[in-house]
Length: 111
Length: 143
Image 1 (cartoon, helix red, strand yellow):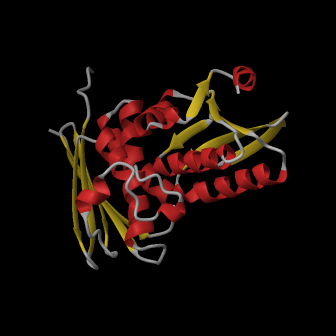
Image 2: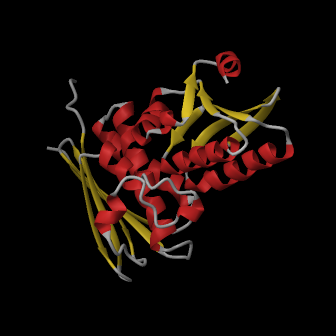
């Protein structure tokens, strides 16, 4: 698992590569929350281009981060998602709270 | 008709979630499943093993066992723990139900297993343990 951050205006772009399961969830959660708390972050954008495994622990991580940014009026989005991860999102109803965009420019423009 | 079986046991450490997925997927691959089918199996195994670690043993040391049986185009996977058991299995199977909301669990574990596998059976007894039996039928190979 590898995690990269980039801040563009008040958008936090989080690229999570590898596997998001219960084992990696805690570290990912902590790292993201540190970024949200220390910077002036409004919206969170998950770049899932190189996420090749995610289970329901990942759903928990996404919902948790959505709730966190939502408290200060922010939104959550996802970009570059593969079919596999999309299936998990669909199944769990995550698209009701997380918007999907093709790429980061679309996401930044729309949020 | 193809027939094979295997059994693996490991400590209830979260590092072993990835190990369990890979072991079962590599055993299942002798049936030449599609990438999609293999991903379904991996995800379901991940959910069952995570449940054993978080809920069965609640982070304490214990043993999780997985036995797999292949018969024809079908794989049966049994994930077992000797943990605290599930008091109300029907409730645990409900989408979004979690006994540990403080851990930011989504409550979707059993729903994921039900979605990705053909059969899910749960047997659980308080303070004895939990046994999850899953079956997946792979589409027939053309070759």
